[in-house]
Amino acid sequence: MPVDGRLLNPVFDNRPLSHTEDRCRACGSDRLHRFLDLGEVPLADRLLTSEWDCRAEPRFDLVVALCHECALVQLTETVRPEVLFADDYPYYSSVSRTVIDHAKANVDARLAERRLDRSSLVVEIGSNDGYLLKNYVAAGVTVLGIDPAEGPAKAARAGRVDTMPEFFTSNLAHDVRQRRGPADIVHANNVLTHADDLRGFVTGIATLLKPDGTAVIEVPYLRDLVESVQFDTIHHQHMCYFSLTALDNLLGAHGLFINRVERVSIHGGSLRVFAEKVEDRDASVLDLLAEERAIGIASRAFFDDLADDAAVLRDSLVAMIEDLRSRGHSVAAYGAAAKGAALLNACGLGRHHINFVADISTHKQGLLMPGVHIPIRPPEALFEERPEYTLLLAWNFADEILAQQGAYREAGGKFIVPLPQPRIV
Ligand code: ZN
Image (cartoon, rainbow, N blue to C red; front, side, top):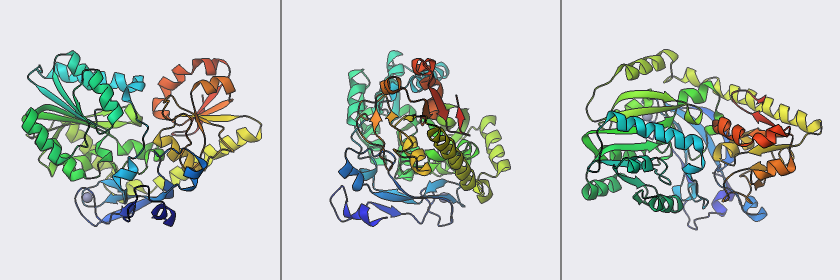
């Protein structure tokens, strides 16, 4: 933890802003193998308002480790939640067509395989603006969303999606169960990776579920991260990175069995697991666990090349952009999300490389990217300024963004897709 972070403590007390874990977040073992050190980096989601804000920007160690006991891959540094999630610009799931379509297909499949009606209860943890639960509401199913982000929770309620603006904890799970009864289905998409108290979170899911209920949990898949060198998805808000093996160990320790698993393409490759209180594993689980054993996903050798692969990718992306700049071309970027900030900082791409970052969120426009301090502008800036190249930071939404930016591309603008190898489209 750097000195400037302590001096400029944004929460005004004497406790440090972060602490280093020497034990596994899931199983408590001290057998952690640190395999990737990305140095001291700024918080990838903390956009800056001013030059003064830039000078006061805290940085934190970003080190990734594998637990030899339970196979969980995790950060060794924990930034205090009130610092980590202090951003006051809300993220609305419904701004992405990809996310909306993915959620609707998920709900349609659940409705097709289980009888659900007004007397049923479906809960989503991290329900955002109701982008997923609204599909159950339309089918006449009773829902409850849980999400601490006020703005999106308010938008959800306005759309008839009953939502509690709270952090999910095991205590909250008890309250909900007492007041609303147990749940038939609990959805948790991309929230387990953010859980500060992993064990409390999973206990809470088990508390919420009926004896025959199902938890449908999605997490970015560690194997895709490693194989496609998605090192920009590693940042302080993502405290854990899951294989099926690790997830199975974690849920199993809290009385939940993964009975089915699907690999889904969203966010560069994710796992969707179906966890229940009675063990009834199908072939999808046994097969994927066997595949993970075969590639050695729980062993340190699986992670040996990641640091080198990330360095090669970083160098080739920087070389490509510096070459374009040296030939007089202008370069912008698209997508002011955490992974964009992580990539720019890891590559050291600053204002002298990238003129601005375009982003669709009005809450981000006018602010500066963490660390590299590049200004954020509306997507229309691409068409107005006509940078010849645009680095696609939000590569997980490549299809959607390339389609939206048809006019820019027809006018001759080109996109640089950074992963798994930098290429121009
Ligand atoms: Zn462990």
